[in-house]
Amino acid sequence: MVKIFDADLIKGHFIVTDNGKRALVDTGCPYIINDENKYSKPHGELYLNDARSNVDPTISEFRGLEYFAQHKVLFDYKKAAIIVADQGDDVAPVHPVAEFAISGLPERIFINLAIEGKVRKMVFDTGASIANYLTESIVNTEKYVGTVPDFHPLLGHYDVKLYEQHVEIGGETVGIPFGAQPEIIDQEVKADGAVGVVGIGLYEKFQVLVDWPNRRLVLGRY
Image 1 (spheres, rainbow, N blue to C red):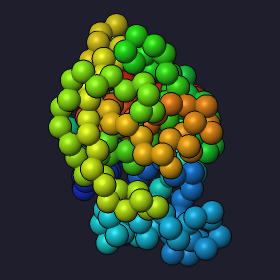
Image 2: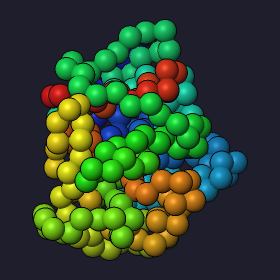
Image 3: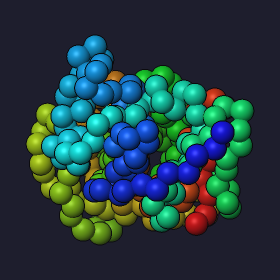
């Protein structure tokens, strides 16, 4: 079965209404979290409360990677929509341009991106909806493109200076803004062998298909 959900894009996060629940769909969380199970999931109450405080107080469920395990999920930022297919059904970007193998499941989604001429292991996180991040020492600061406010459950609110990085996707080079990771995020990312987090930098420019059953992430032109 294939379902199409209209999404509310609040601070760049995808929120859908499904079976009467307001659900935040986020690849950055490993779990499905709601009021019924929030005390049995690691940091469950923190994830849920943070989403309600900083994104939308009406959120009733956090749909993380447990949800993706049984589905193929296509994010369409420009149409403010999410298309969800069961394992045996097909869904694809209209104009696919690049495909990446994904690893790190079930805790994270990792892809390898060519950034400033070097292949970097990155976390793909739709919860990174305000800023993309790289380890500070590898951020190319030649092209400053602005400052945005961001937040983190353990840091509160803070400002991020963004610098455009050259990223090779589908045989082309696109400019994607990145900021330097705060230390607490940097430590978490480096512990997984990665150097950064990318979310809005991809789905703002491309349709993004997360196909967990086939261990791949596919980008398509809008």
